[in-house]
Length: 521
Image 1 (tube, rainbow, N blue to C red):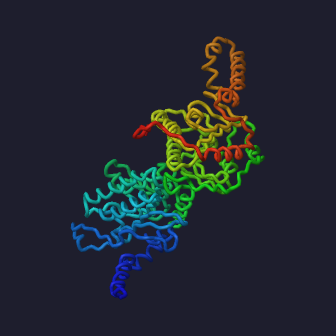
Image 2: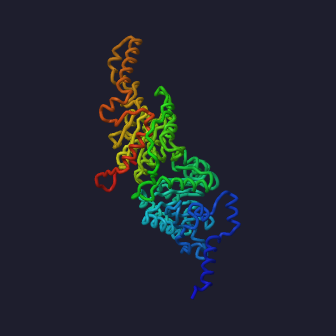
């Protein structure tokens, strides 16, 4: 006997009520504002017909403030798993049309179900945030729901990639879940924003007046706070960025990233690399031009592009091998490392190491940024994060010293002592404790003070400075101490790095057994 048609009819009616219970009028209004619905966002993410929903018929169990009579479709969240470009991915999408997407206890459990499913199956998790925050009617149960989500964020950290999309409001406790994930993509404009306390609360407590844009908008988080890694102008673009990110990441930490080892290993010289290098090392070099010449065509995906621009980080492929690029940018702050740049680089290094992505480090750094604000802000602690991140990383690490590499910043950019597997240097590389202008007064201070004639003193200073430069403003002293693998012609850079990466793909390195290190956070 076939199944009773009435049962199938009831199922279809229930599905439609949950999916479209908010009414077409509200959906049309969202579209007019440039917003997609929660289900439309998931439809754009997943391959057609591949999405399996979790907990579609879940209901809240709150009876406070008349909530016992309130029906919230899907309890304000769509949760499930499917295929993204053929790869398994779990995802959740807050439904602002259902009770403002507010998070209650059962709402949170649907998020946790997707998180736990992804963790067990070893697949990435994508969270789409568009919520008014905690459901006040549920009181402490809503807070418990947040805690459960946070706990699972941490459990999944470093095991499966986690990507958050801020496509609407993300306020209060809700903002901590994205902060615990690997990447945050935030939409510019509309109601999208991320903050702990809004302008009214800030004014009540601190008497400081501000606008929502000043504390929670996309550009603030992308350039000032550093909370957001990417900015999108629409739901469609945000989802496209998430899908592109997945092309560089493995599904979990037990897998290799999606290398394309069928890509031909090109060991030919690149004559144009030499053409972009200034004759004088004191002139700025745009490191992005170097990156473009090193990596496969159009493969560089910059991360945190608007934040701490004196260091560049991002994913790319070099002859098919997925890599994480960490590079000083001499065109900004002379390439000095500061508090924000150190945090940015350390975070990216840790992410790459978590997911078995080799690191390529491009060094042109005159030092850590000097200044009272930097010292009082904890540059020692923040700079130590980079040293910790590189030292603990067990993935292949290849370093290229292009020009300046001075003092502690030389170390912090992954020298051989921090575990670099190969260190290459251009002939114009300057590897020294500090620049000549700072070193000579320290090394020859007494001698210079003893010269009474100012002209003679200045002549001697310049002579000593020239001697210092002849000794250290080249990579040969470092090479003589076995700190440089090979000094190379710049045109050989891509070939050398590509070949080295291929030989390091089988690298295996362990660390002493311990619960975890105590990173200087």
